[in-house]
Amino acid sequence: MTPPDDTGLTLAGLQSLIRTMYSSKDEARGVEGTFMWLMEEVGELAAALREGSREELAREFADVLAWLATIANVAEIDLQQAVLDKYGRGCPGCGQRVCVCDASEKP
Ligand SMILES: [Zn+2]
Image (cartoon, rainbow, N blue to C red; front, side, top):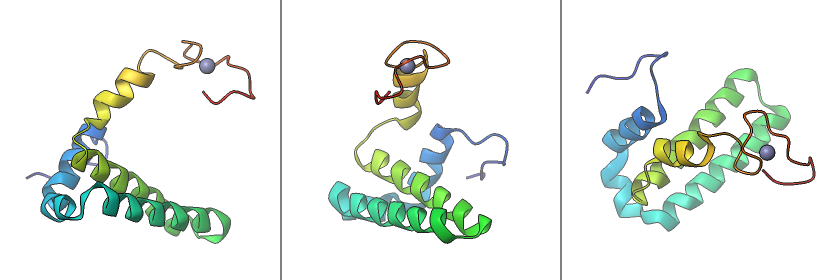
């Protein structure tokens, strides 16, 4: 397969890339095992936000996104479609492109 270039990567492309690289391992691990890895990566992102270099921080963002794509693969969720369905028409709370929900609300 052709790796995505640095300007054309979509969520669908990321999910496909991750599927190609890891699907057999991911299916064996299952949703629960994969979720634990995602949580570990979220913890590493938290640590990098506190005290990591820019390079470490960038790597942790990439890891969290990759593990999220992995779980979407195992759970058979089309991540790009899911994001478009939920956020493609604006804020799910108020429907606006620039959210006007009350700041105390979770959008
Ligand atoms: Zn809103």
